[in-house]
Image 1: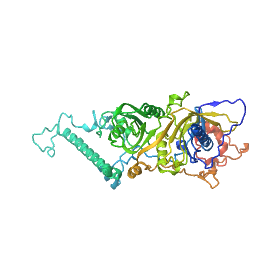
Image 2: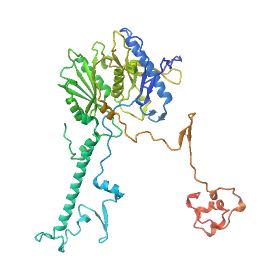
Image 3: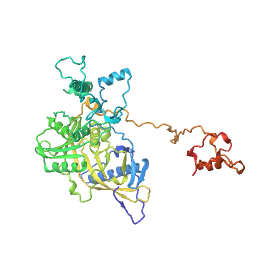
Image 4: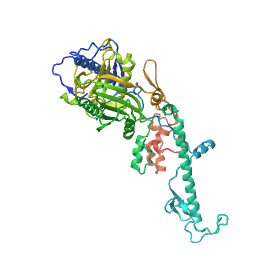
Length: 206
Length: 329
């Protein structure tokens, strides 16, 4: 309410309105529905009639808010706790769907494998007694890539001319590639599932 | 159709995420735009509706060669570009003077459209009323008066559309001080001369007067705009799309709180579960004769527990350890 006007003479102004059909309210939307027919509207009395019906409806709405709703007074002012809206209005966008599971997640669910707990990026290196990152700069997954002497592994050395020094790194890069490929595949599956699964109005419109 | 882009940095990623469908939705943004020809009246009306809807509103300045009921693909494009799901399109022609088209979108596609012809003679803009206006972005109170909103399907659809258009954000609580203005939408009953009565939209500032009762007396003062609409063409929502749009997300219902119930009389009943009481720790009457002597001298280190001793007198020496929690310092 915008202003609290002081009235000098202590006259009692009516605050109740009686209507043949009681109003219905949707306090979640701060709305009152007055289904009483309007009095006949003639051009001369139109504004007067509209004003008085609006006043009555607003008075009843304010009465409803101030009497039925929990009021909470704080330092910032008095707050009315509004109930959930009754009138359903259409959404702006569809209800978000659950994210599609990746192939690993599907497999893990089938087998009952719980997700590993994330324990951070750093890992303890027993040999040096230091904490090192699992990947990235000076990551522990690069062990053996910078060694000054490399043992030639007969099984890994398929090509005789391949440099045995770069084999360890090539193996790691290959793992990264494989993972990216799997990610792309999962993304593709997820988009395919979401576009085909929605059905309904979209398919009919096209 | 806009391309679906992969965000290249965190800022654009956040911006894209803000547009994604949400479980609890944000307030709908309203877009205001005009056609190639728009009268002064309808432009004023558009501006006033824009100022009522601020700040969740965008107003275009340029003309748009669009006919919503013929080809609305441009409007769908604007909706997607601006992430707006409500739109008011102003146009003026000889056949349909002072025309405002209210459009709703679902997933950037037109849900429904209704054309409202503004009465140019009775229209009064906000500036014509020389009084203070409501603050920007406040939630209005809305009243619908007239039996026709219940009986006539077209008018009850209009009621829902106006409610969707004006209600603003759904909030859990509202400052009583901020209930500043009311939007009153009313229509007379249909008669034989006028089977489709006009919809009257009025906006009033609220003034509360001390009444001598506990409740205040409400007085209204018109703040504008004053609009009288004649319903024109209507494009109804397709049932499939409406069904999809009206879906309620699961798990959003109010959770029933455990152990709180309401009996038939309307009294709230709470059930409280209490653990079994440990009678061993029960405080009994203190007597000087039962007080243990000399124990604190021998165990001087546990000086915190000095006063505790008399509590556990009955248990004698087989009290294993007095927990520091119970110490009274």
